[in-house]
Image (cartoon, rainbow over all chains, first blue to last red):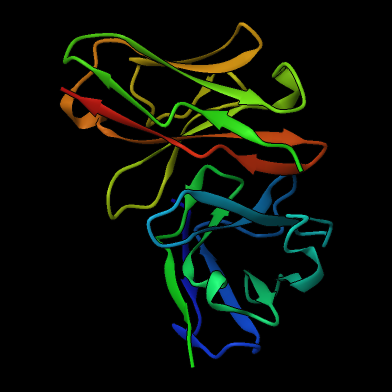
Length: 114
Length: 109
């Protein structure tokens, strides 16, 4: 059974970089044909698609975040990561990772505050 | 960036039928938008009920079905149950990029 677990700091200062990792268990991130997603949800708001990445490294990003966003895959550790730089309070959200959109992590709360 | 539109809220009686819709600012929604429907209950992560317009996951209750209807993607819930009260999100694909709708809050009352 595939499981995903987000990890990273719960508090990030404004203008700094938000870094999150999603560790995959029960499946290989290198298995072909699947993409690995990041989605977020601001407090009291709807879902926002951030982007996704294939194990090959090919990725698609939300245009509104593209200039600040990096994603990567670590095949040796079976995990994938997100880096969002120059964060502001508007980046405060619950961040979810997902295998395609079928299997989701439980989400991790990130607060941007000084 | 395209805008995906959903009803903000709907109410259905227990045992009743309701259809949620998902429109696109770029025109008619087609199978090429690979519509997904997700359900989210308070305090929980979302889960996908329908993908690629009509396909169900093993965990998708049979009372949920997806379709294209009048230029929109549609999620139909038949024989609504109290546990179906939740937020429902549509997601469309635009040449690889994805956009969520604003969500529909469904009340079973």
